[in-house]
Length: 422
Image (cartoon, rainbow, N blue to C red):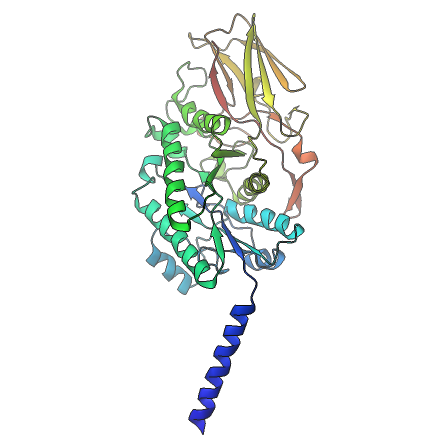
């Protein structure tokens, strides 16, 4: 009798599970991870995202690479990651930019009535204190990253759900600025995106390209030999490469530079609130990408030399342009400089009108380099004393979000640049 009852109970349970699976609505999983070095992994960023609140307020749309809601267990190997999860070890559960990205994007999808049909799978990948070539295709970090995406794809497929990776967020470059490991960062980052694009398509069978949502690293002053008035300033090569890819390549879209944010001890790592803020910016970029309206952020569009003057025309996402010395501490000439081949700053005055910045120089700037946010106090980063500038658009007048009972406007701040005038 007991055996018959047990058999009936088992059949009822399996029938219930089968009915639930059969009747459950088909979902589409959007994988949008972050990859890079320590900023991607949230190092030193005290977590401010409450995971229970994240899941409830986003209608349980946000999941990990395991398609569950057990966030905050990243480690450099699968075994360590599993052990951390089993032991509920959260001592290094940092704030990640993708929490803010997923939060903002899920709320957008909910408003679109897609709360029951879409999931956002997000997680970190990469390795701290590592150059771009040490975390590219063939590296342990890269292999682990692909394995996690492959695992997520298999889980989704087994349930009968669609799975696609439309984009990833990139946060790497500090190591290459300080140590000069990459001889051609632009080429290296483009190769990374192309490799990942090919490898993801092989896993998911998707037709959509995998776009890179690209921030900009600005930690110039952490390099021992940095000199803001040096004509040959090698530290600007990585930030400029990131800007060039956003400007020239449709496989790259902008989130924003890091200089407007707070850094832990004003050094290498942005803090928890800053991770959330730049995550919101990445979320806006993703939303525009999903709407087929990708954003280049606030970047210079055209440089024109006229006599002793440089005219810089900008792409302005949300006019008007503003020279803001409140949210970012004033930098000399609002962060602009013009360095001639003799290592002299020949800039005298900065004027702003509509979408054009006018740099008035002491002499002809032909052959000189027009720069922005190439300055700062030795070993400092961030909006107070690091390499920075005061130019932004006015997006924050329309879009702002609360973090810990404070309201933060989501302005687009100008990307750092270093451009030869010829």
